[in-house]
Length: 211
Ligand SMILES: [Zn+2]
Ligand SMILES: [Zn+2]
Image (cartoon, rainbow, N blue to C red; front, side):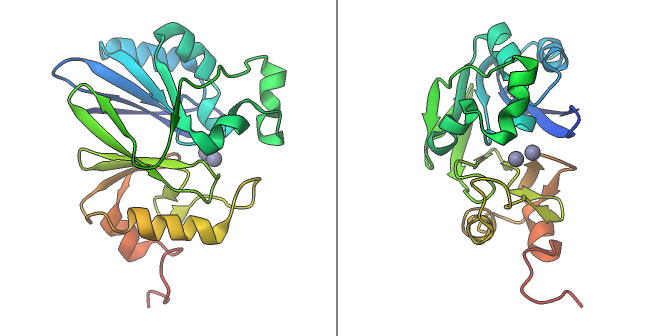
């Protein structure tokens, strides 16, 4: 499996380009900004992008959606519960009006338990509300793309519209902490980690102080 991380834009959001080496099928997760850089990398990798998957609707993850959609023709997938906010004029998306890059509508509305196939790679949609109501993680091939749900030594904010701290922790514990320790975590911001590292050391997930 090809996994390329691009850290993009003023919010330093991670965009991932994922591909199947054997048949060059690919997907782009969270095209947050700098569409030209995303498209250049996908082209360098010679991938045919089938899907653009959004872990959630915040602008720092969808800022280059229009550009990437128009260039690739790939299908946009987002959880049902974040589909409306993707195109609404809520404060998080005010910048769309300034940049005149209103995002195109999604092609696929996801629910937890759905699968996304990219060539011979298979990913399961985990619905992990709490950062937003339609936040998802994508699990497959020994890795999980965690969006703004779980970070290296951190968790997502839950003080924005649609956020809920109790729900976020519940999502992390019931959907992510049940995965094997060796699972690689590719978050929406910051460096990669593993489920085992976060289980043992993430200060937000410990009920007791570590020492
Ligand atoms: Zn976010
Ligand atoms: Zn973010």
